[in-house]
Image 1 (cartoon, rainbow, N blue to C red):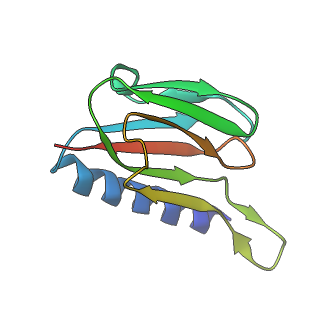
Image 2: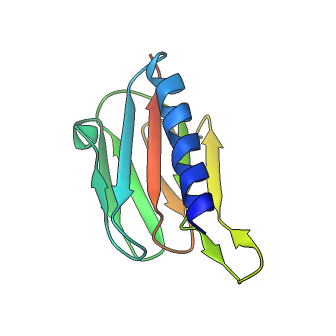
Length: 114
């Protein structure tokens, strides 16, 4: 289980570093399963979030969103390490939308166009 969390964190860091070169990135993370998302740095100046128990409503405060990446909490059935993720490229409305993930996510990352 720890290996899955480490791999997910490493992947998230690599993607964030790559996207930062092209434009602004707003990252929101939760401290634990079922907890609310909190902005990292000044993410709340770029994206306004309204959280529900199974979805997140978002509005961009700083331009068009190019991609959205949502990571779920890893879990294990004792044999296999599991985890979920959702990637939205080119949202139909780049200024606002909803993400239905089925549970409160571990993180949501918004990459804005440069």
